[in-house]
Length: 354
Image (tube, rainbow, N blue to C red; front, side):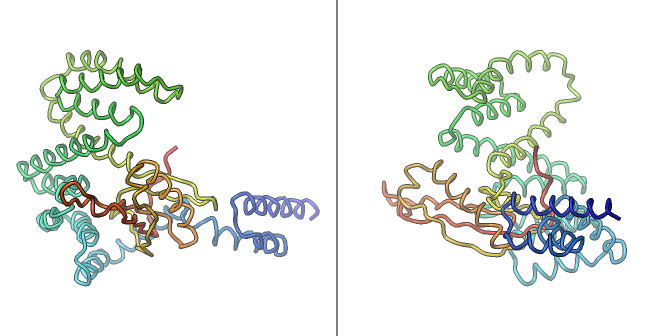
């Protein structure tokens, strides 16, 4: 018994230390120490389990069981959601559910209905359309979607490079061009990376790594291309399109840790449909004319504030929206506008990158 008591006391101390270390309310210490075992169990399920990898696995298992017991339940729910609100999120969620039920023509129609306005060249939607078209054996439509996705990725990189601080965006743009077979444009971009590194020398190790990679990539790529057979060309093109989508996502959405210790994903993209998110709130964030003068700094400031505020709202995903550019002549009429931050509670966020 004394050994068991010592073990329980050690566990209590560990839980109390975790509560203080991660910035949880101090009264958790009294609950943990005042109620042996039960206090630790309550703390775990209230504070630690939600948003954890175990919670995501449990939710995934529960959905799998529910799908076996009632295969059409989720499909019916998605249809009802779309009838209530015809948003892009609801359409893509229903399209994904149609893919699960092998209803590929319906999925194609849903994805195509989303590709309008601000979402006309959305990489996630175009990739979903290409998947649905391939499953439906519509090769022409799939190829068209992938081509549009690639063009959108190239355009996004071209818009990002003048604003992105550092060499990473230029290097990744060059890699994408190389994968698409645009060797001359890729070499020009790699030379630009090397020139910037030489002209604006930085003591940061990561910047030196991008410059070194830019020097080495053309030679390595040329050797690989000499050994590549014609039958691999289609595979490389598809991989390039997928890489474009994934790379752009990595540049806009990242993992953060709030002051409370909770993991929060934040960035300039709405959460994907497969994250199973519910929107909790949308608030203004100070931006104004100072933000337009230093967009990178303003975006970093607003994102950090949103990450720290998310746990108090019960959110684990923050979508940061900078004010749009609307000009009359040479005057930006949105110069004094504020940014917007939308907070989401997501049930199935991807595993944290390490």
